[in-house]
Length: 77
Image (cartoon, rainbow, N blue to C red; front, side):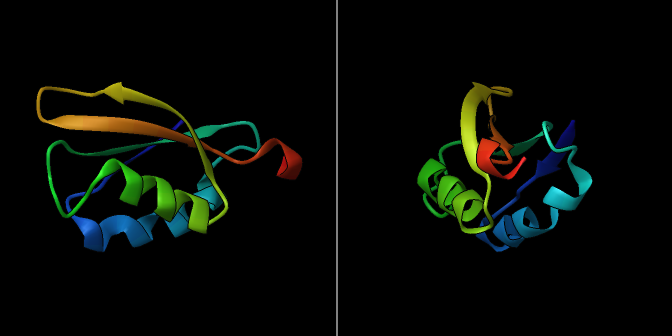
């Protein structure tokens, strides 16, 4: 399993480098601050989709952070 932390919208580009670290049926958890207007859930989802990943779970990481799991789509595994 791979974890990546996003501090702001400038970090969304990190998502494009993650697939090479994943096993074909693995996942990456993206952890980002909660309640930010410049880094919303829809922004994280869109960035994942743009690099060919799909989100399939979201969870509260802490009082201040949310985490979202991305996987490689089944059709490409």
